[in-house]
Image (cartoon, rainbow, N blue to C red; front, top):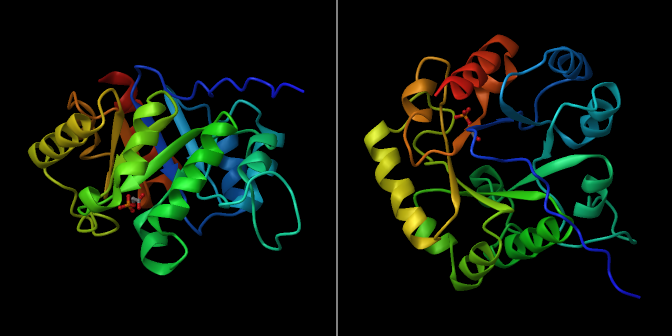
Length: 237
Ligand code: PGA
């Protein structure tokens, strides 16, 4: 039997993208607040696994991302794993992969395993948001680069320098431009996000850079008004 053709999710267009990464934070109450709020522009919220299906059920128009997925796809006897197929089923548009907090804390988030996850996400018709940091030369090995080049429409690179994540010290706009240009040279046609201490105050300067296709927002994505302000800036640049 022929496999069904899966069309990559259209979660990103030329409009700047704003992804909120809640990390291991949030609650059903916060999901309620976000669901009741119509965000302007192209916004995706990466809530923890337990809230994904709930968020979709109360507000089907809210675009959702997961913060990781299994190296295994489909369904099976793999206790504790969450597959890309399941994330697709509950309505996720995107999956964040290889976040430095995971690469640092979990020895299983190796480049080889992240590659498997990338394949699973793209196979299931979602967008993979592949995070890299200052060590991007090492993280983007030949196999990962080949996959990224093969799927320019369904893989996005998010550059998140370790020095900027959760520190309140975002990279300078000129530093962001230079690095994202280098990433774009490495992966022709790829869209590039910046992440690391993005706030309503610095969002406009960052989002107006031509190399920035959008932002990945951690801390500020937990406060509805701050997140909305960033989304408004993205819609206005
Ligand atoms: P931050 O986190 O915005 O709190 O710096 C960004 C991220 O880790 O994705």
